[in-house]
Amino acid sequence: MLEQNTSKGSDIYRIYRLAQKDIKGFYKSILLIVILAAIFAFFSLLAINTIKNFTLFSLISSVILGLLGFALLTIFALSAESKYIFFGLIIFSFSFFLPIFLFKFFEVYLWYVILSVFILLGLYCLSIKGESNVLINLNWPRIVKKGSIFLSWAVVILLIFFFFFVFTSQGEEIKNKLSGGLDFVLSRFIKTPEGITFSGTVDDLLKGFIAKQKVEAPEKTKKTLEESLLKETKAKLSDFLSVPLKGDEKISLVLIDSVFNKWQTLSPVLKWVFYFIIFLILYSLVSLFNFVFSYIVIIFSWMMKEILVSLKIVRTESKGIEKEFLTLE
Image (cartoon, rainbow, N blue to C red; front, side, top):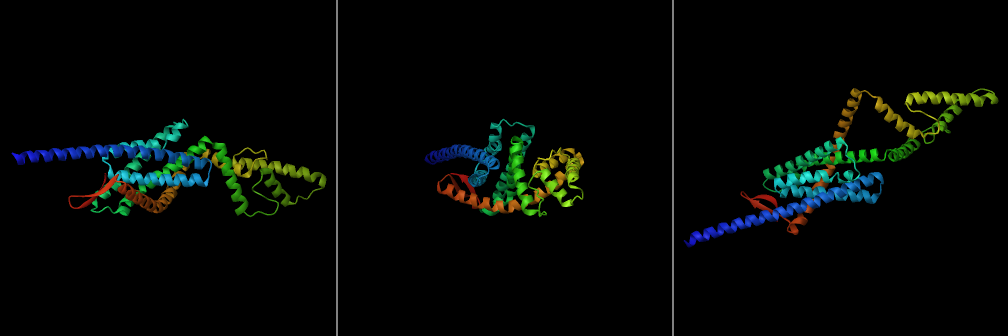
């Protein structure tokens, strides 16, 4: 009888310990979800601000905050239960776009971007979780690299959307910034004869070319001929670029407007060809980005794991065949 009572007591105690562990796991999972949601929201806000008004401080702040968030996401995916991970991914996918919602931006394609980010983050969590389950030891570099390509794609899609959002919300301001950058490229990297410059206006450029023609005519008619030639050349250039020209427009702005106007007139087939080419280029760039990004995430997440283990928020434990797991403390 005594042995039976002792057995029942030990069972009750074991159930009690399991219940306590579940409760602690629930609260810690919710806490991590809240912290991660806040980090991702602030990361997006800083990234958008960096694109709008670039400063070295905002760039470094957004990069560090983003890496901190992705490192914590890795810890969360490996230590929390699947139901909390799924719930967390829904929250995270929306928290990235919280600053966008604050600007009252509710375009239809925004929901497709949110869904894409949710799927990619989900694939990342599934990949690293699955890899950790088949390994006996927590081989951190191997686990993170297993799903890092999905995380890289999520980051690239977020950044592309942030650039697009800033461009659509501040079109003229961004166009002026692009114009300034193009002016720098044209003046520094394109060699032109003396008297000809691509960093000025349309009239400045055309007058420079006309002056190089050395029009043979009496002084009385030379000015009239040059003005007539300027007007004719400007009209032909306007037709070629599909941009109305008065003459006082900056060359860089005219080129930007021309590219956008030409794009609008392209056939759907040619647009899809360009989309495919852009995708191939982007795929190569993302692969290159992932090569560097994965190692940075490995380092940051491993350091974060060690900090959380020392704080007794998570712990490494062995189960069954002495297999290591990461669980919430």
